[in-house]
Structures are given as structure tokens and as C-alpha cells.
Length: 323
Length: 274
Image 1 (tube, rainbow over the protein chains, first blue to last red):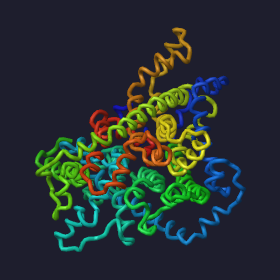
Image 2 (image 1 turned 30 degrees about the horizontal axis):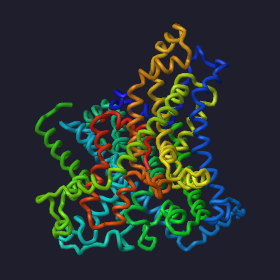
Image 3 (image 1 turned 180 degrees about the vertical axis):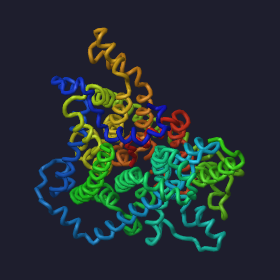
């Protein structure tokens, strides 16, 4: 299997891996009745899922439906509050701007990550000397711990001593307060997030390109198609399914982004780069007096968004496998 | 595809430039880690660490070793627990096809879409009640949630490639299912175990959200918090911060050098990263 990762079947295989639908049983042995014992092998992971996914999720819902104080958080007995926490959050003056930031952060990050990733994938698909090595090196930003990337970008974008402002100064542009002015903080965290996300887009789109049969290009070359025509006529339509998957996975991961924003700006200044994820964290852990109820409520709103995207992703994956 | 060489090398040149641009922030991190304090705010900034210093790395040795040690232990624990949970599950889903298996795969897929902040808040509430906040096992358990769903999917994909004949032969020899798993399936799945272990280690090593919520107040703090406290406390000593960042990047670099071919597999196989 590992040796096939670079081959043309990569995306199809990985797609199968992603949904992990086990290949249908061979017809001769289909519908054998007594396979329940196989759950012996699945028992550990099932118990694990219940204890460390389902239960924390349940606790989170419970947090959002009760009126918790620090005292009742430790000792229990918080009164049931119904949807009060959700009402608090939705009517908070910060809700509108934060939702807008989340949408802008996600959409802008995706647009740039995808476009640049696609351009790089097309470029590296041409197979030149060293292309494999260079493609592997570009993965570095994706593999680095987020705290490393975020602190490096913080220093690059530092108002007084950052390299970015020094470079702008050479061109004659006044220094920008990237991280400390409300007008630029969201842009700054988007820049860092785009940088981190490009490798993922590159790798997935590249394996999608690998799956396009070369004969198609040869045929169109005989017909005298230009490179641009080949891209819009062959590559783009054939890459659509993979592109869709890339964008949806990107959407799910970008909605979750917390570390980069929190480390670079803490969602500030004055909430100008806060997203639902950082707001939730701030309410739960960022202040001296934690507000777990509203924090959990925002978290649950976020999960609904992520799950909708996730279900769309799974539907598309399934439909493509049926084809 | 070894066509006209001059043109191909011209493309290599462009490729080098593009890679250089992408990796420039990494270079900058390394550059700053060697820069002297008095040069830190030089204008324009020094592009090379002429008059370089090792002060930053000395600070790492003096102050960050306990953090690195904690991260290493947490990483090992996460790897062990992840493989122990996920390998049998992958085998069952790939080869034994139990009723309800697809439903479990579906749940695993959903599980990796849950935002970390939600998991962290739930874990915090539970750990507070159980009194396991700021403990190593607590952090290890939470960190495994970053890797287990991914690991099961990888194992399932790899193990469905194991030839049936191999497993049949073991059964004919009278081996039980458990024995088949232990002495046939696991040894031939070495590659997938390596892939899963590397990613599980990397993700637990890189974890910030569980560390800051579940281990932020204890004696055992991982390196991500080491860097975070650095940024918060003495934000003047950027060479020390960046030196720590360089050291914290070593596992990622090692992963890329030692296991390059597994990495793109890992990225594309329902790639997960917060």
C-alpha cells in the first residue's frame, strides 16, 4: 500500500480509506451469520469512543444547558437553565462581529490556500529534476507544531522589528501594526493560516492530478489545444470531485482553527480577530471568572456548523465511490 | 518524463524559488534563534546570523528540558495507546467485517470533525470531577483523541490489502483469530504501525489546546506550553523563543526525513489536523 501512494490510484484509494467502508465481502462468502465475535477486536475502540468522545460531548451539552458558577462547576448541583446560555450568546453584541470574522477567516483562508495549492500542484505535476524532494519540503509548514508557526509569524509581523514591515519600508510603505491594530489583526492571522494550509491543498490536489490519465492530455495535444485550454477543458472538470473534497475538508479544519489565532492575537485587539472557537475558549478559560455555560453554548454552535460540512463531505465521498 | 533537459532544469529553478518562498518563515525562525539580543531590533533586520550566538540554545538547555521531557513521555504514551486501540479495530473492520462495522467507521469519521475546543471543555469538566487535571495520564488520554480515529482509518486501509490466503493459511495451521492477529497481521502491518505512530507522536507533541486546558496549572507541562509561557513572559528574548521553536520542530523534520513516503499518505488519507 505505501508504495502505491504516488501512483495514479492514490486519490481513489485514499478516498476509500477516508470513509473506511470495508470492501464488500466476496460474493461466495457473503452473509455469513456469526460475525458478531469480531466485535471482540472492536470492543476497546468502541468503549473508548463512548468514554472519550461521546461523554465529553455530552458533558459539553450539559454545560451549555445549566447555570454554572465556579462553585457548582466543582461541586455539582447547577440549576437547569434551558436555552438561557444560548440566548445570552446570541444576543451578545460580540456575536455578530465574531460570526462575521469566522466566516471571513474561513472563506478567505480557503480561497487562498486552494488557489495557491492548486497552482503549486499543477507546477509540481510537471515532473522536473528534484520535484519530489521539493514537494516533500513544502510539507514542512503543515507538519510544524502550530505554536511554532504562530510564534514565528508573530515575530515576522512584529510592528517595530518584524521583517515584513522592514521589507515594506524598503518599498516605501509605512509600517503596519499587523497584530496590534483592529484593522489588520484578522488579516494577519489569515496570512499565517493560509501558509499552514497550502501544503495540505497541494498534496491532495497533486494526487488528484496523478489520477488523470495522461492519454487525455496526449489526445488534446494532438488536437492542438493550448496549455490554458487543456487546464479548463480537461484538468479542471476532472479535478472537480477532488477539489470539492479538498475544500470541504479545508472548511471543517478551518472552522476548528484555534491555536494560531489564540497564540498570535488572543482574538484581539478588542475582539477584532475573534472567531467562534477563540471566543468559546476565552469564555471558558481565558478569564479569571470562567463562564462555562456560554462557552459551551458557542462550542455547540460551532460543532453544528462543522457537522453540516462533514455530512456534506461524506455524502459527496459516498456518491463518488458509487460511480 | 525526462524530456528536454535545459527546460526541465529551468523548471527546477522556479521550483527552488517557490520552495524557498514557502520555507522562508522556517529559515527566519532559525536565523532569529542565532541572533544576539542587541541585534534583535536592528533596522533593517540582519538576514544572516553574522555574529551569531548560541545564547538562545543555552536558554533552551537551562529552562526547557523538563518541558521537552514531558512532551516526549506524553508522545510515547499517546503512540502506545493509539496503536493498542486502533490496530485490532482496523483488523476487524478490514478483515472480519462484523455487522455494524460500517456504522462504526462512520462514527470515527464524524469524531475527527469535532473541534478541539469542545473536546477540551468536556474533558476539563470530567477531569475536574475525577481529579486528574494536570496529570500525565490525563493529558495522554486526551491527546489520543487527536489520533485514534485517523489511526483506525489508516489501519483499515492498510490491512484490507493483506492477502486473504495469508490469513487462511494461519487458520488452517490451527491458529486462533487472536493468534492470527498477533503473529500474522501485526508483523506484516509494520508500515502502517510506523505511519500511525509517527503521526500520533507528532500530533501529541504539537498539541496546544489540551495542554493549555488540562495541564496548564501543573508540574508536568509540555513544550508547547513552554513556548507559550516564553511568549507571554519575556517577549524580549526572541532568540530563546525561536531556539525553543527550532528544537520543538525536530520531530516534524525527523518525520519528513525518515518517513517521507508515509507523510503524503497520511495527509491524503482523510487528513486530520487542527
